[in-house]
Length: 239
Image (cartoon, helix red, strand yellow):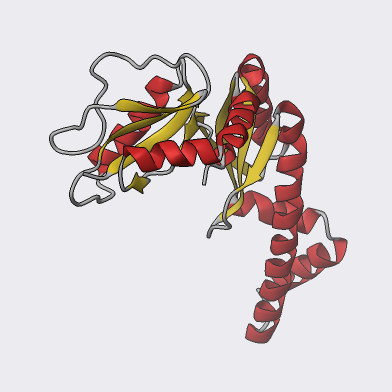
């Protein structure tokens, strides 16, 4: 039977008794050792699918294993042919994994997504461009202007908002980065101007969260969504 891998930890990591992983029925979690490392493993189901129950089980194993120290979490779906293959991979990348675990020790991940409040950002854009503001006022006095004028004005506003998105994405990263040991940029997504993951030392987490909460207080057009603490998926880098 193939081996499912949840993450990598120091060899002295003790797992909770009867820790259960993915599958129906849930597979018991075990460790596979090589040198100073263990892989957190279980038997893999015959058909592995990203069902909600298994996604949560994977996350649960990583979180519980990380309560007593760092874990290199693997994304859902990591399967090897057998335990011997897992041990061989641990041995091949041993020093690299040990170094990464040391860098993650005492730190957790927070994900921050930032959005524009559409009405508020329009006010900010107009206030920051006297020419655009004057044109907006003139069109209002003229009852909105012609169809062509409205289209042209809308295109100007859209470009100004797009530029503001770039500026605000940089502002968010510049503001929060000093509170983190590392920053990882997530994929661009519709509707959000920033998707950033921060590796934050535990003793600085409240300070970091205070800085996140201050963003919409200091910039009325920003809205934030913060998730964490999380296993450090964005900073684990195990192949």
